[in-house]
Length: 103
Image 1 (tube, one colour):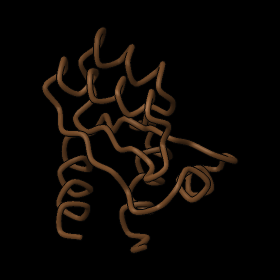
Image 2 (cartoon, helix red, strand yellow):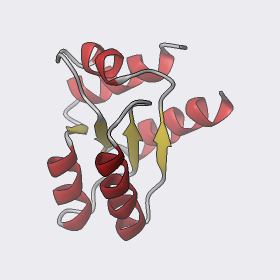
Image 3 (tube, helix red, strand yellow):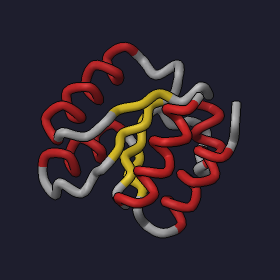
């Protein structure tokens, strides 16, 4: 897997522009409206995928899958595992989206 999207997600985290976890992403999509992109790990659970799709649709934001799994995404963000994140910076979301759609 190309690690550039993961590095950009790490940059989002350090900048305070990354929301991690299904519940937090859902709350930000419904409440604050600051999520510009939702990213899922390749092996995210079916229920997580369904809820993330519903959040993305309700907020009108794209949802993309990484080629990496939950452990890969989690390690890139300083956790053991992570299945879903939301990017709260429009410019970084656009860059990450471009990289993921190109692969």
